[in-house]
Length: 218
Ligand SMILES: [Cu+2]
Image (cartoon, rainbow, N blue to C red; front, side, top):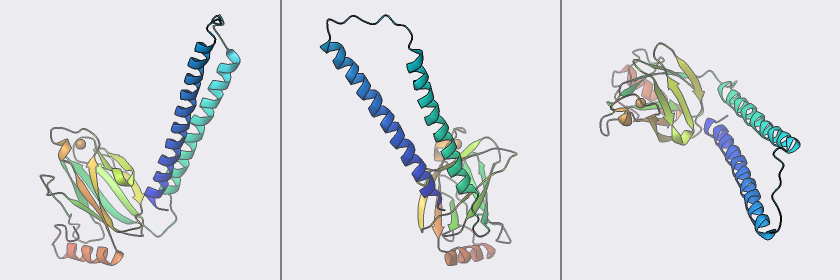
């Protein structure tokens, strides 16, 4: 299952429900205003409580909340527990203020790296059509790996490894950022995530072995 499709669907459904709630609340507000104007002779109700109405209100809100939490958790589970081929592994290390990406399949584990200064951004290269397991950590403070277009974000903690699996179904390049304020140059912590064909990915790893390393597929 493709990650951005799953999270795209989650976002679409939640936005739809939020829009529906907004329209219903707005309609009730307009109705109340018009009704009040129409009935100028009417006196205001003195009731201070409507237990049954409030119970309905709580029940509907609870139902929406439980559904959204359960459905989102289920979609998350689907994404992270795919029974596809064994994943390709990439180690991601964040630090003030950039990223390194290491490929354990390549013997020398060289990292395609940039400095995060100006246009010199590191590139995370992944193959298309295969699950890629990213193991994410930090060398100093808390960072957060965020790829807005793919709707993916996960925090990077020092002395801890967070991992997630993503599968990209088409070739392309997307901008990633740090989503956790981490100091003076937090705003420069950008990187590219680039999906290439399995053949090109293989060549990229071979290039790593040769010691090239600096964005052979960037
Ligand atoms: Cu940051």
